[in-house]
Image (cartoon, one colour):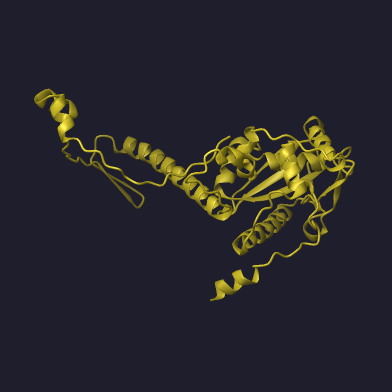
Length: 317
C-alpha cells in the first residue's frame, strides 16, 4: 500500500523550474541529428513514476558526494541549489554544472555522476569512451561564455550507487572538440538546418537509435514490434552485466582455489569448501555409431526437435 501510494504521487511529472522544454546543454549531442531530435522534440523520452524516483535518487546521491568532498577538505562554490547558469554559443544554450572545486590551488569545474555497476565499471576501465554525452556536456560547459577563458578542465566524480565506491578523472578543455558541436547546434536552432541521418558508433549508446533506425525495421514488418520500455531494457542490461561480471569473478576465484588445492582433495578457504570430485557420464559417440552401424543408420535414429527460445541482444549500428 505504501509503495503504491508513493508511485502514484509521482505519476505526473513536476517541472524543476529550469528547463521549461527548451534546449539545454544536456540536450546537445555529438551527433547533430541527435541534437535536432531533442530540439524539435521528435523522440521525447517517456518517464514513469519509477523513472522519476530513480532520477530523484540520483540527485540526492550527487548531493551526498558534494558533502563527501567537503568532508575531505575541498573548497567548492555554486553547488546544490546555488548552481550557476552558463551560456554556450550565440543562441545561447544554457547549462548548470554541479559546481566549482579547488584542487591543488586551482579552481576547476566539478561534475558528479551516480552510476550503476555497469556504467561505473566501464567508466573506471575506459573513462569517457563509452560516455559520449557526458564528454559533450562537460566540453560545452568549458566552452561557455563564463568558463571559456577561465577554466582549464572538469573533475568528473563518479559514485557507484550500491556500494558508494568513488572514482574520478580530470577532463581537460578541448575547444577543437566542442566548437564543431556548437556550430552545428547554432545551425539547427538559428539556421533551421535539418542534419542528415547516418549510422555511426555514437548510435550504440544513443537512446534515439530505434527512432533513427525504424526505416530499417519497416522493410519487413512481419512479426516485428517496436516498444518504448527504457526501464525494462535497463533492467535487462543491468542483469546481463551482473551475470557476466559474476561469472568472471567466479572463474577468477576458481583458478586461485585450484592452485591452492594442488593434488589434495579438499581445501577449506574462509567459509568455503573446495573439493575435487569425479563424475561419470554416459553418452553415445556419433563417430563410433557410424563406424559400427554406418552413416545411413545414423540418419534413421536422429530426430529434429524445435525448441522455442527468447534471445535478447543489444542493437548494434
